[in-house]
Image (cartoon, rainbow, N blue to C red; front, side, top):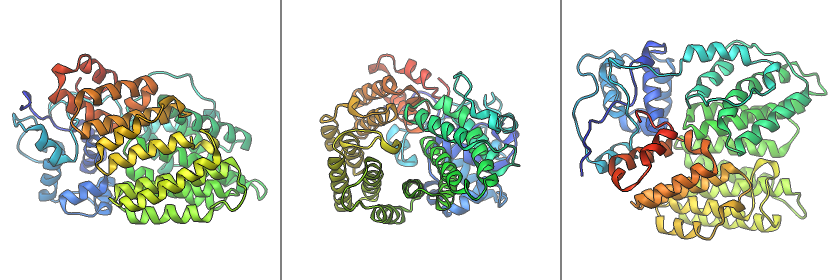
Length: 465
């Protein structure tokens, strides 16, 4: 059945008016559609790195043919890219299956046309605000409030990473406490609070490492690496693969100057995740395998050691599955299961949430990545979600279940899983672009049979609802 309304653009011209030019418009539309740089590059005939240069303004985006190609692929109104012709809100229709084939997933795109509206998040205001919070005083967390738009932390963190240094060094004890708080907020899926916290933490950790004397330099570098890691993990949640790669790479460099091999291993995991999402799956898997081999426990091992080691193996298994290598995925997840068996129970050592339940969660993800929706659901039914020790993992479980049902074309079960994810971890649902994509597709195909779907879409801020 065909949708009854027009397919609207994925970005408004107001993005361009606030600065950054055509590249910023392309980037905003790409993120809104949940595409990686590699996926967009593949569709327009350019490498991921070339698309990144266009988005960041390193290379001017002036080729008319390419601009029109971006407008077509990303559903951008031509006028938003300075092109003549059309306002981007034509009455063109498409069958949902055609939309899935064209974009790799359902689109989120209920935005005003060229002459309407403005995005509530102002990039300039956020960058200016970054200067105010990026100080040692910002390590004291503000009370939770209304969560900013998911694009807010991207702009603020870019200001911290690429803008002038504005923070003052802080005592290592303050940085350590702030890192622990950020890690906890990530695992509790309190992303609204994390948005407020990360810029000051990263900026102050950078200043502290730079000012550290010889005695404190290594521990300061390790803490900076941890700050970068949690920020990179959060950018993965937001589908900002470019910034996730930057943060992961900085985490690896900082950890190399630190004093903790497990933090260094975790930084390698963060880099491998960014590589996988950028399409470099073989390289990602090789990095994870090497990192696991470097810390492979020989004889008795601490819970921290087993947890980081097992997490590397589980992520390697998922990476192999994304690459379509079923045999390698099975081998890695079997080794991860053995590590979980040695650990003996579900725990949260080194913020990994690693244990038998988390391995089962990865088995669900692996089956879903391999296209085995039925196997994913069968595996999920063996797991008690509350056995996982963090809200983030519980939310991730239900989202993976929803994706399996969505892939299996079972909208009612997909919707129930999304509601369970919202109950377990509201911000995990609110901030994840894939959830909005699934919800948008459900709205266009199954609204009448799913009571409360529109209210759910409104709660998680699906654009245009």
